[in-house]
Length: 209
Image (cartoon, rainbow, N blue to C red; front, side, top):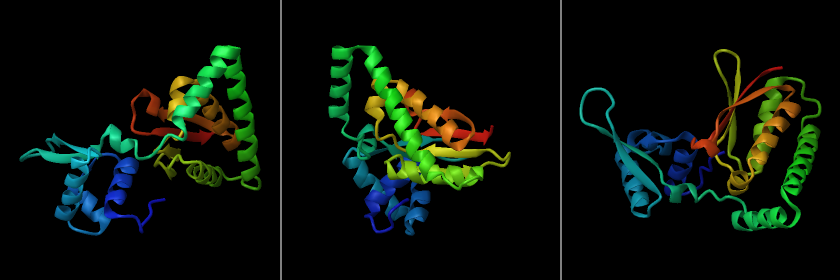
């Protein structure tokens, strides 16, 4: 959840991280200030290399400036102990082989599933389970949220991946997480957006099994 006590700069970074590219006017609404004040904040962030503006044509008239995070801006939301994690994974792979990596992912998958199932006790409704999962994932650093679509599908969104480096090195982490979601939600889960494939976020479409 966005922290209202954070500085305007941090709040704008959080907005761009969780909602994607924004107009300065929309950022101003988010901050409760004017579009010009938001633009000044964005210019300062751009000078620090955290955001950048691109021109888009929206309807008739001059191109509009749309602001988004740079790679440096995304890095403000850290990948948990990424360097150490990659070193450990590489050591395990070199010392014990690829099978050991698969075993490690399997153990993590079972532990995560057991924890989530414990947290899901007493929740029979799918919406309640998705809401609880979003809370758990946010607690773990994924900046998760959920919504209901007009067709009744539930969308679970993770705006950040705190294990991105590990997931890049071992795709099995992403595969295992998808399987855990299906088990703990007792539903059909489809990944429709994936950070590892260049998307801004990971998103999952959840439907009753």
